[in-house]
Length: 368
Image (tube, rainbow, N blue to C red; front, side, top):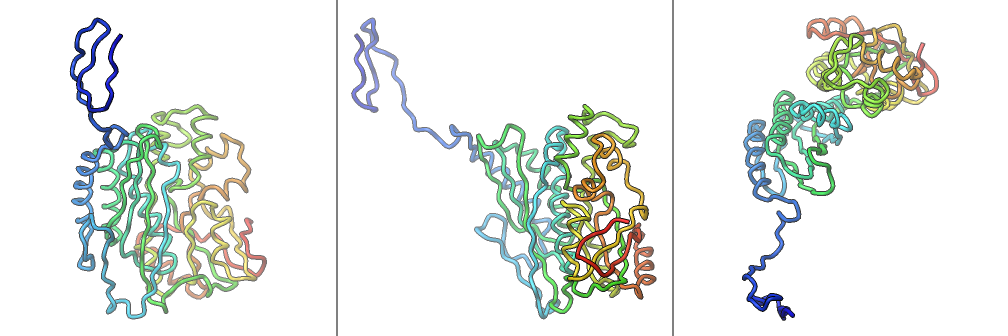
């Protein structure tokens, strides 16, 4: 009968045949044994630092890697500053990214969504923080994602000053991750746009979206992949595109054109059309006692939305409160400023549609 070691430090044991067993070295369980590769994480963070530094400006006072990012506010430019913040994610659009192996656009989706959310209040973006969580770090995938974030930050004049890259083995399936971000912007108090200036008779200018942006993907994926049985690489005549490409169009930033409109003094309110569509987003800026009359024939619904509706026989009301339907931003323009607003948009080479007006009534959107 073999002898059992009496303590963890025992180096040998006797086999059933009476011969000494091989010596075994006992080592402690490491973080890597639990699925977290610290070395890979550290290497990835070095790549991220390089990308983030490209977005820095003179107001960034810290390096990537500190416990917090430091940013100096320019009080000469903003003498009466009000900080504006927003946080969001990319949602189940990421599922399409996983399937296609396309990771460089979702970072831009995230930044542009957040930029638009604060731009409608007249704010300029200052800095951005990202949160990226995955089961196992793939340095090349992480680099593609952060490259998209950094490129979009630079395009919007925003510094990427920090964030978190988390390894959470067992929490995410292999090859999957989640992505979210927080943006901080600033606006002078007397330039804040809340919609309080909106009046009956104001006109609604709709600015085109680039596809679904980052909303409605759970329904879109069900209709395209389950109901229709499409695969992402299939070219669909009704879409005039491959399914995956149509779904992965980047959520655009409206910052540049909104700045031109606000500088021109032709804006009384703005609404970013995200989850909830026009139906639920536009009333958020309407004063009490006012409604929106939206004319459904005032713009052409893009093929993607038309095809989605046909595939599932989706009710019109459901479409309007799930998708942006081709309108990603609504700008409210006082009636007397319509001509000037059109001129500004034309000079900016920005397509637009006058999609309705503000009227007296219950605070909601009426489709006519």
